[in-house]
Image 1 (cartoon, rainbow, N blue to C red):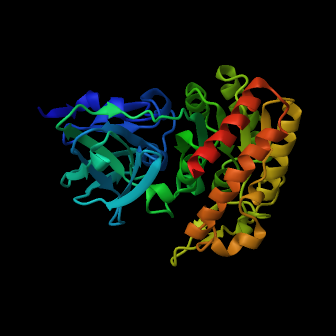
Image 2 (image 1 turned 60 degrees about the vertical axis):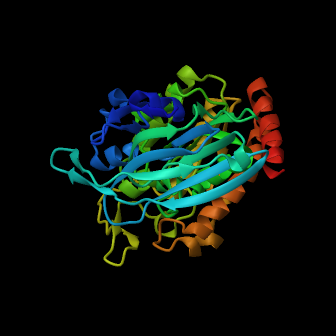
Length: 396
């Protein structure tokens, strides 16, 4: 008997989806924020990035040959990839699949909307390893929209929960977290850390849009988590969207909104990684014809309070100290990627894959250390113990 799953049945296999909308092939397209929250940010670049299923995975347990039909919608001709991780008897295997038949997303910048021009569906074939029940994680492309059309198998397919419970990690960040410089989803630093520390990731990285929006804070707060990390600074300076006067209360308000729903969850604010063009110069940034970035030329008569990366780090440190929150800490982004690593910023702004790998390796070490630096609470103690256990099990 063939078991076919379509429409809303497919939502049972997806992780951390706020809601889905129907696609041109009557499949489902996942959103990372609810319609109510995402409607509050009228920015076409935000709309695109929120709709990219960054960090969203299909989690399947299969006992018979299974096919997944899906399609993608891209802004351009950039190659798009899906990463497939199989787990069987403690052994993890990875395969990357290039997407075919991509459709196009055509933005309408005047009206803040877009149209989907359908391409052709592709199929992914999965086999149970050695005939046994096998868990698969299908990491969807983070740089194009995805429509999941169907899952079909000769036997019932179930949601894969894994044999080892995972601690829940919610992350909010910029393009460095979103990771367009990593074509393959599994190579993003967030996914590397989640795999290494055995964490269940809710990904709210939004390229160019880590702007302390209240809608984003409410979305973070709505996801129950065992640890929350927020990378703050680079996008605000890049866009020149705030001065010191607005940044300080916006940061307090962002943290307040999270704390209204998650009062004791360990919460770590990550300051900006190195970016020499913006360390001591305000934004906005300008992309040049060769694809590299520079800061805009400024001539402002009274520029007091203009933000630089160095200023945001200092302000974040001060705000966190003022809040006197035992489960709140700062992670210095320069410890993830510092001035000696500036050579990995090939476009003067974004790290290449070498830099992304450095961030992943360093963050996986710094996260337990940062939790250890927090005042001892049941939540921080539990998270530290589970991280230690998760890393040991992931390395076995």
